Length: 366
Image 1 (cartoon, one colour):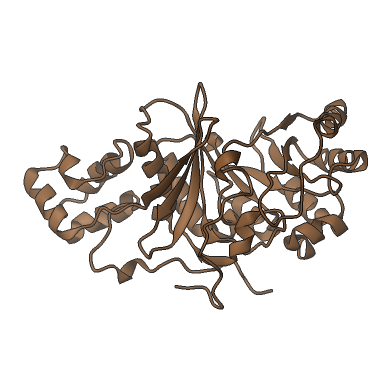
Image 2 (image 1 turned 90 degrees about the horizontal axis):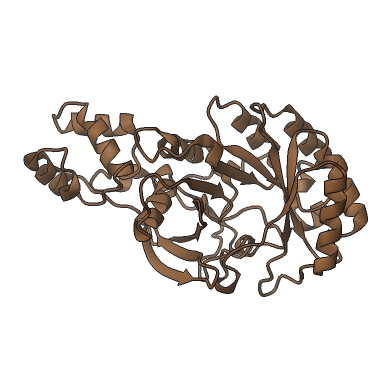
């Protein structure tokens, strides 16, 4: 079948000047070597970019003034720019990021007492076409680069004055299907988890997929990787294919087999995300089928009451229905929780991220 997820990201070579933002240690060493500087200077820049989160060359106090002046003249330090921020009553903030080509994506900053969670985008738009998700209305425009993914993290942490040492969780549950963009995703993951940089532990990074079996298999082959979550949302092939077209390629049986074969560390579980659609996916029979699916591999279940958006045609179920499903799953011996999505009042909750005015092109842009 055609590899729809092999969409290109913008070509770095089109820039008039090199951009250091988003480069890994090897890339930064190559950059400074090309300037005639010792390669180890690249490691200093890496720590300044990611541990210190510096955004201007003049801040790089570990470098000589002469080198800072030269870098200012010859090398860009350009991250995605926050162009709009909407604060929710629950304390979370939805941010819109403008990219170098003028495209925009969204991310969400969610503070808690003991940590902060960032919801990140991996693509401009999404190819999956899930009927309950607003992002799917955009279609797919292009992949994000590793720099654009890392840039969302740097921009949100700097915007909110995040102190060093406070735990950060990352969830790739924003715009796009992360496993459609696995190469750039894993390049970003390597930077985000590097102990000399942002130092976010892999166990605090979760990638959510709509069910790309080929991507699940590839992800499992990485020796160091994020945690895996599956957006399941239905318990029969008929219902799932109706709301998630990916199921017509990889059905529930193919998914269960891929998840059962996924290599897990001791104590690790796959998260099953299950959006509750009133009258569609919230029956006791759905609960029993969900329990049977989840028992085929180490799993925990995250029930997500649907977050309404214009034109979806769906509604969340009553609280009594949610509670009944929660009890059923718990009695089946499964760890289960109900996710009360944050940012609903600013359209920043699960399934609500969309940038108006950006639509799918007949052919994906380079």
